[in-house]
Length: 237
Length: 81
Image (tube, rainbow over the protein chains, first blue to last red):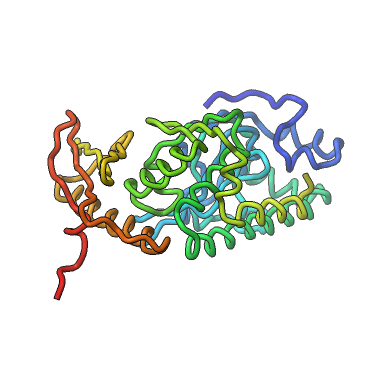
């Protein structure tokens, strides 16, 4: 992974929300890393080595059942941070965090992050609000998976990914989409083809292009807008 | 290396191709997944108030694009009384 000193003008929205003097003290303790698709940042039940403030691309939080089945339980882009348990002082995670779309992040070692949480009073309330926002995203997803139909959930997921992407083309395989939505791949084909026939998206091998975002918003369940509102209320724009 | 199969969905005249396919331990494992997927698709249809089409099917294609096996939605349903 390429590494370099972080530049001024961060894209991560949590860091950008900090007072400039706090940010300027934190940045020297971080390094800029590229995130590559399928990189595993956190593995369940192993010590978390660092936190990652995502600058671009996105990271998926995935729960694994005893039989090996996986399902996405959270999505983190430039609005957030990977390594949530460290915020509350817990050093292992229960879920896996892996990169789902190439990008970059500002990484801080676990030890340096713990020190920063002690030394920078501005960090704690901001990150506690972020924990609550992520909890809200996860609880909404749990309820959504149980109640809403696959087309609504696919539309919701595409909007979440589109918010975190640069541009309208999302690098995403059917395999990942099936994992994201906790369904079999042929189900993804049927739901994606419905959205494609309605002119909302175009999909092919390894990519989906968003053609009509407004129509996706009309198709998605309310869960998308509900979580957006909560993020805005807790963390600002 | 595990064999690679595509699970295409045929709904009436429409063929929904599996763009990437996936790896399975065997064609039997691909068939098991096709049956589970057919059930899932039918559940979604019933949930929307639609009647599943029993002649729809999932076509299991090998790496060269040859049809290995067809799993009709009918096969994925429990046998009648």
